[in-house]
Image 1 (tube, rainbow, N blue to C red):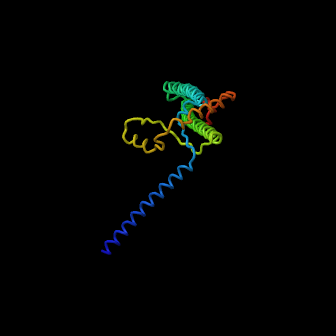
Image 2 (spheres, rainbow, N blue to C red):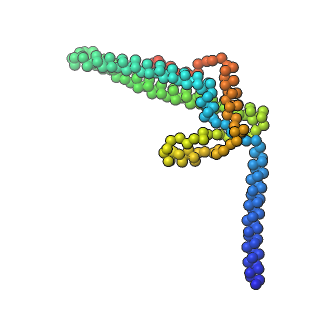
Image 3 (cartoon, rainbow, N blue to C red):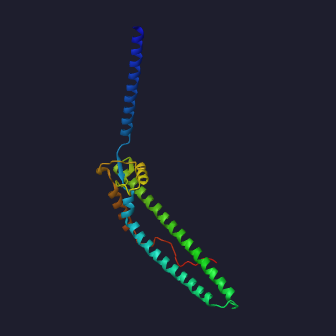
Length: 217
């Protein structure tokens, strides 16, 4: 009888301890949630896509790519023309070796130019993505100080792209925000502030790419 009483006491004590721990943990979570203060969210990808600076940058990128295509066609035309000349030359022509070296130099210049343009294009895109993201952060921080919110969360598109199971699982795994009240979404507010700041500045050329740059032999 005593053993049963003690066993019940121990079991009851253990259950009480578990309940107490759970309640204490819940209270701590509630205190932690309360300490976060006001929380907002924003769709950074939408901001990038609809920011006027990025729209203007896309126009400059398209123009630069067109210039690069034209320059590539010009260089390839030179190579093809010289190749036709070489094909028509006699093996005994004393200028054959020199013209062959010219062909090799043109091919080498074209490869160096192509690699350089691709690297420059990638760098320009990277630089402006970093600058735009920094602008977004600055506007969010300014809004936080003015409006009094404490946390800004990244809001991704609710749609899952594609049908590949692994890709879908990866998209789900990367999701951090599953739901947000539309009232706490500051995407449009941030976008309006960015566009207002940008349009207030004089329009200047953003890209520094020169497709006609001559490579060093």
